[in-house]
Image 1 (cartoon, rainbow, N blue to C red):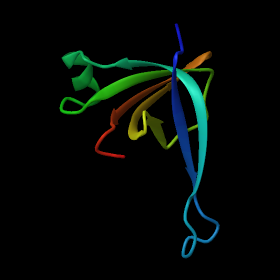
Image 2 (cartoon, rainbow, N blue to C red):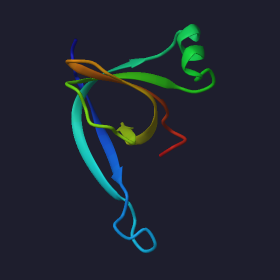
Image 3 (cartoon, rainbow, N blue to C red):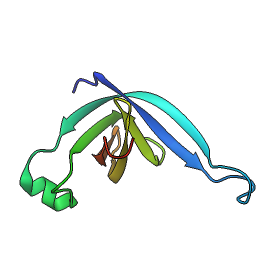
Image 4 (tube, rainbow, N blue to C red):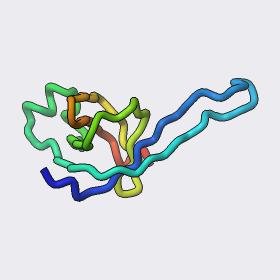
Length: 98
């Protein structure tokens, strides 16, 4: 596989004082392979029939992530599959989120 795209993984941690502070956001840029999900059968399996969806492959296992930023737009993570040598994210949204 060629990992020729770049995405930003966004992790949010809760604030020390929930009444006055905001969540802390950590960003990490990694290489990935982005594959659009176009099959109607696959879209219905993930419940994404009316939205744009991507399958994003990242080398190595990745710690839990809250959001993914791709081409300046934030995408919602629907499913995460962690394998021995890679992580696969099923994401949807895009333009409406960012």
